[in-house]
View 1 (spheres, rainbow, N blue to C red):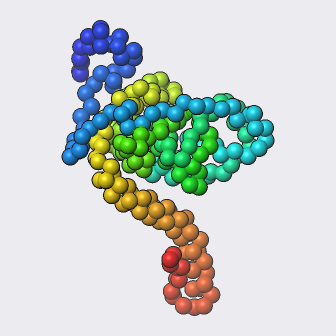
View 2: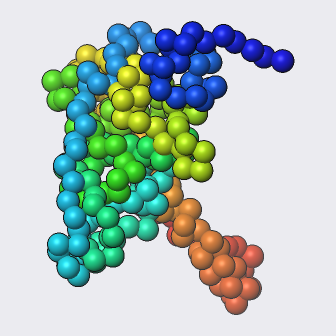
View 3: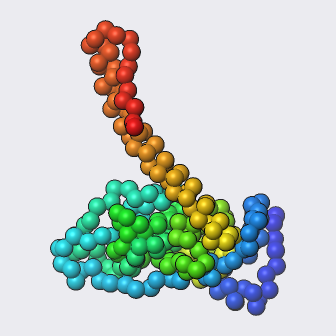
Length: 232
């Protein structure tokens, strides 16, 4: 049976009783660049608003359900009536990064950029405003979604039925921070891959219908060839 001793002073400083918090997290990843805590890279945007003051007016509101795990794409998103949001919401602006603190193992991290670059979001997001002299927004989004951060998902969550990560714990996590010129080169490639993911997902969504249509066409013409439209 595994056991360990935790000093009372450390226990009270931690202000929690979860065993996982006191176990050592071993991470095999390495970085050629300086490791810095997230609190040196971004500030939490704490502004909130009550959506109901806008009545039935359509508003931009991002919920956890609108962010795809790992890739951070928006899913099933459209403006919704302000009156449908029953609690105060956080606000975000272009370039902000929204980190899902509820069940952080789901790895929901959204970069606010066109076409949805500013608006309101669920209080279950930690909204981070990057310090532009230190970190680029897209780099911050991807490093937050990487194993440098996700390795701590279970270690830092508190709560049984609705486990959450606190802003303090998130901002204390250290991540590699290359110089801005290196980040710019990485971000250019990351953006290209992001676009490729979107294109491939769109292609995947249309293939079943094309397959069925191609089969019917082949049977109708008597030609044993199923033709599929190739995306350009």
